[in-house]
Image 1 (cartoon, rainbow, N blue to C red):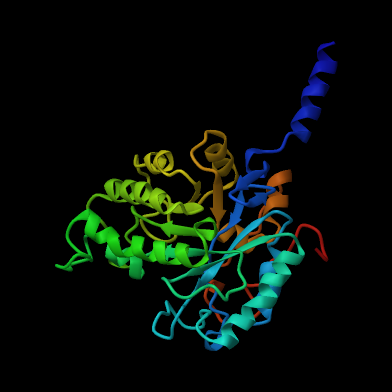
Image 2 (cartoon, rainbow, N blue to C red; image 1 turned 60 degrees about the horizontal axis):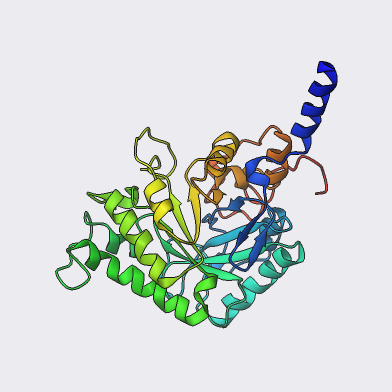
Length: 321
């Protein structure tokens, strides 16, 4: 009898999905799992125009009901974060994105584009927009008291420093609908010398203020990612922000399979964004499902301009996938 019970228990473990692979309803979007492709600058958009090789790159990482956030795209010729990053301020650039989004849709995925800051987005082909308010770029510079030295209504107090980013959120939400808008924030990070003296208060104020805008999700980078690529031990947590925000809460910051399952299981997040692991493993949800060995990422190819190497050449578990 004990042997039969042990067999049944084993069979149940095999069919019970891990927390990361449970379904989730994000506003009007029905997600089949909780694994999100994080927005990753790939530097393969020559002359600020997304290229045909990006169709394969994003398609490789698409699953039915999967959520992908595209790399940050500039909304003007003065809003670029680096060379060969995509733009969406010309008709040519917008048209170049359409086959990419179509390829994701053909496989049943949901595709949001990350924007450096506000712009006219009503003509875009994406399912939604993520506003880039992290990583030391423009909006993050307004938020952080270590870099914002303004003396007008956009500087000084916490409320003033958050004013412009929240105005951007409202402008985009008014343009395309709050149910299609998310924002990425990194209150604890010090990327590009952009730190804050009280990141807990900053993150909590933004989470509470975003509720007034009614946006779809808040995507926050973990406190342990003070710098861009390495984890640091800390007792700080995103939990107060998670509890304060009413919409979908996405976390990012060096997660692995075990940590991702744990943060979903204990209710600390709704979704987990994976960057380097998803880059190196285009079939990451499948690998997580069967707990397969992961490909190692090659950091030296992260920002090269090669259309294949370090971009679409990472192997799948099964050939011809």
